[in-house]
Length: 482
Image (cartoon, rainbow, N blue to C red; front, side):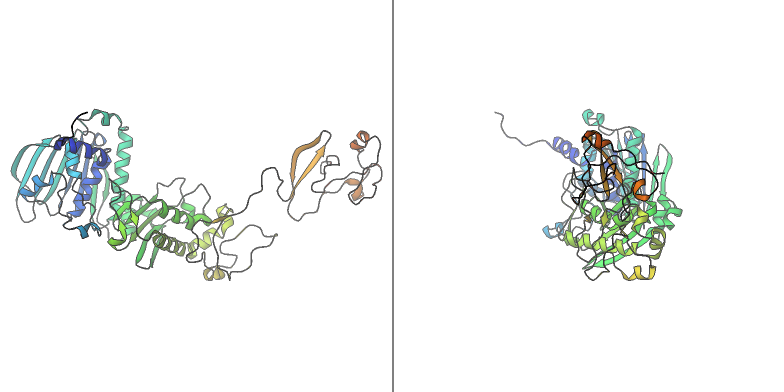
C-alpha cells in the first residue's frame, strides 16, 4: 500500500480544471464574469476555431497591480471574499479564486493587466499553469486574458469536444444570456475575425433584447413586473402565439446571474399552460432579484444552479407576476380563451367564490369567458394554490368512454366503436322511423327462429332489431345512414 503524500500544485490545478473547464464556453464564462466583477463597461470576446485555438477576453475595468497578477494565478486567491459572513451573502459573480488558475493549467496563457490611472501594465506568459516570463509593458487600463490551445496537455479532454459549430453555438448562447443579464455593459463577440454579436449598452431590457433577438420580436414582448415579500420579478415574455417547441428560449436570471432552475421553470410553464399546448414552451426573459442572503450560489462548480432559502416564495412570486402579464388585454383578445390554445387538459386553480362550472353542453373550459370586461375581474389562480395544474380524469383501460356505443356483429363483439355527439338521441332503424321495411334479422337465424327479447321483458315482433342502446350487444350492425 502506497503512503499518503501531498499532490503538487500543477496536478491539483489540473484536477480543479476538470470541474471548472469543460469546454471553450466554460472558459468564456469565467473570464467574462471576472470582467463584469472588475466593473468593465465594454467586454470583447474573440474566438478562433470556436475557442480551440484561441480565447481572448478583454475589458476596460479596474485592472490589477503588478503584485496582484502573480497572486491571481494561484488557487483560492480572490478579492471578493474577506470573512465567513461574506460567503453567506455573495454579491459578485465569482468568489472562489479557482477559475483563472484552472484555465491556465490546461492552456498556453498570457495575462495583461493595468490599473486605472496607470500607463504601465503587467504581462505574464506561461503554459500548463507554470509562469514562463513576466514583463512590464505600456498598456491601457483594464485586463486582457488569452488562452491558446485548450486542453493541449490533456488530449483525452480534447477528444470529447464537439464540432466547431456546436462549440461556437454554445459560447454564443452563453454570451447572449450574460448580455441579457447586464444590459448596461457593451458586449462584442467575434469568431475568426468576423463579428458574431454586438450588443451596445442599452437603457432598458427591451432594447438589449432587441439588439440580440431583433427589435421586431422585442416589440411584441409583454412586460412582467411584480413583488412578493421582498422577491422582485421583472422581465419580458412573448405572447402565447409566439411559443417555441423547446425550452431554449427561456432565460432565468437570479441577482444578475443566468441560472438553470427546474422549479422556477416549472412555475413559468404552469402559468402558461392554460394558453399553450402541451408540447409548446414560452419565450421568456425573467429577472429575479432578492437579498443575497436568501440565495446560495455555492452549490455547483460552475455556479449554474442555485438554492433558495424560501423556494416556494420565489416560485409563487414568479407564477403570480407572469399570470398578471398574461391577463393583459392583448393576450385576452388574441387567445379568446382556452379553446384557442388547443389544450383542454390543463386547468388552473380558481377561487372558491368563482362562477359555477360549465354544463355538459359546454364542456370546453374557458380561461376568461366570453366577456372581456368580466375576464379582467376574474383571477386566474388562487394565491398560494398548487402550481401544478389539475388534470381531468381519464377513462380506465377496457372501459368505453361516455358517448361511445359498442355494437355486436355476427361473431360477437367486434370491438368497433362509434362516437356520438353528447346529448344526441340514438339512431333509429328505418322501420322505427316509418321509412320502409327493416332488414332481416341475422341473429334470428342463429337463435333458431326465436323472437328477440327486449330489455323491458316484452317480446319484440319478428324481424325487429335492437340497436342504438349503449352497451347493447344483441342486435345486428346498424344500417348505413342515408
